[in-house]
Length: 269
Image (tube, rainbow, N blue to C red; front, side, top):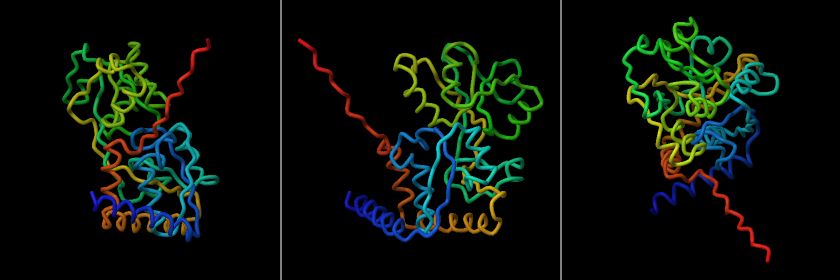
């Protein structure tokens, strides 16, 4: 316990020192992807917190703006108002307009489905006759992305993860891929306990890929490279200090959730 308190104290002291001495601001788009990122979580979620702390260790303050993921991507790509975005997997298409930092964490996506639907799969060919949901601008691995793009798979695209839950529960889709921890977080946030108990996931990963910060190639090239280098250096320092693992542990314990005291209305007599 004392070790944990000392690490948290160091994080807070580091935060206060670096925020006071920050000489540069980086503006990044963000989105709803609980429990990793959300405007409704402390520090905007553990992923956002790690990114902020890594930059702060290099004297750079992060300012976030939340949008749908489609908007977050498009606005970051332009590079006029924002410098980049957080929580993306590097792909050949994305690397044409973005620089990618070292990975912040690893993203494992699996298929979710109703327990009443007997779903098994081994290869993309097993998915051909299914009604599948997915989110615009997300990547689900080269095999899935290519099959969806060429029309081999029947994929309905939406703008937010939680829309997939609604489509599944109303029968609009049969399966959807999602990061496992994000999927269960949304299930328990959007559905009742009884409804959530109707949903499960297949054990086989659709994709396992690193999540990074991406910096637009449309901002000043020298500044873009400097931001990537600074972040990578700050992330390494954060991991070496033990603060990175402490943040991950705190998130898994639910310490990034913001609890709102319910308002009890008194009965008018």
